[in-house]
Image (cartoon, rainbow, N blue to C red; front, top):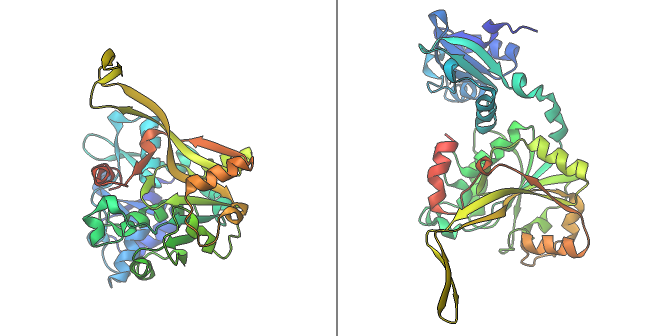
Length: 352
């Protein structure tokens, strides 16, 4: 069925009330702000409107003061489906305008045009998410001398909020945050944020390793749940990951990625102080654990109470018990580890 393109456009002279009416009709939560002849000025999302109303703008206020002036777009000369799909997944947006060399909108592409209806995400609505956010972030000093690691900002938004927002985009709504270091500061931030998340806070009595604190979650209702680090940002389709886990009937499914590491030095092979061979800057290929999992809820019974316990301990325990553990491969460019300072420059670029 052909789109009614007028539902996606709003003139810069229109009001917030006008934009709310159009957003409700087009189903993408976003409008393209234009002037005469569909010259693109920017975008206006439901989030932009909510922020404006919180700042005491009223329904009759002009949208010219609140829209995003740096929209995601693709030039018609560079248009291709692979690039378009990547932009949708990378930026987690619902609409992308295709513009000509003069910045006039020639075509509008929605998420549904590329991936099909988002109504399937209803499958994930009741699936719970556990995020391990209790570490001190020693490798991120001096930032973590002031803020807890989960609240370090990436483009004016804490990394933990980026993680939660990405899950919420796929209709995941129920979160358990396992906290320890500066727990009250993290609670205070999310209790006072403009965005409302359904969060259950679980505070460890002492540091319990990379998964030990999960034993303090009173109940997980969903048969399977996501578990994530708090310092890794993902750009993946969570539904595909979840469906792979369920269809494989895994006890645990790890997100993994093929990595190639190039050494900075030549490699020497030596025996009895004699050089046997030398290789210039060798490359090592390996499969990395990306720090994202789907698990059956029964796994919590395997975590000891109030004892330091790491994810590697849990996985090795499951292997000994002959539990089925599978993997889900994701592209190397689909995740960003923020465990050390040198990783932040990439995150600032990828998550602006």
